[in-house]
Image (tube, rainbow, N blue to C red; front, side):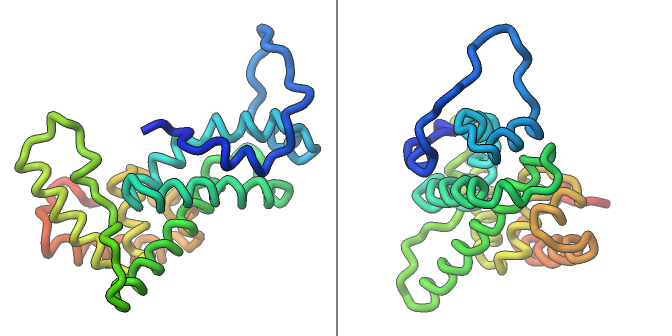
Length: 211
C-alpha cells in the first residue's frame, strides 16, 4: 500500500505551493526549520513534512486499524489536525513523536466508535487484521497465531490496545509509548501490563515481554 494514499485529500487543505526552493545540491532542511517555514506560510514546507512522515504514520495506523477506510481517514485527519496546530508545537525538531500522538488519538476515537457499533449490532467487522497484513510467505501456523492475536486485541479497551501495539508491534520504547499515548510512563506500563494479561490468555507470548 502506498504511504501517500490520499495526498490529494490532505493537500486540498493546503494553499497552492509557491516559492519552493530549487532542487539544487543544498541539504534538505531539518524538521525544525520546516516547521518554522510552514508556520510562516510556506506551503512547500508543509508538503515536505507530509512526504517525510506520512509513510511512518500510515504504517502505524494500518497495523492499528487495518488496511481500510478507517486507517486512510485517520491519516488524513492526523495531518489536517497537525497542520492546524503546527504553530503550537513547542519542540519543533520532534515532529514524528508529535504526529504519532495525534495518530494515536485518531485511532482511539475509531476504536471507541467500533465498540459502540458492536454494542448496537452495527459492527462491520473492521477490526485490525495483522494476519491479513502478513507477508505472502508467512506460514499458515503463523497466520493462525496472528488471527488469535487480532481477536485478543479487539477485545481490549482502546488505551491498553494502542499502548500494547505501539510497544510490541511497532517496537517503540516505553518512553515513546507514553509520549504517543499522552500519559505518564507509569500509566503506559499499567496499560501494557493489562493488555499483556488479556492477550496472554489467547496467544503464546514467548518473546513478547519487557522482562
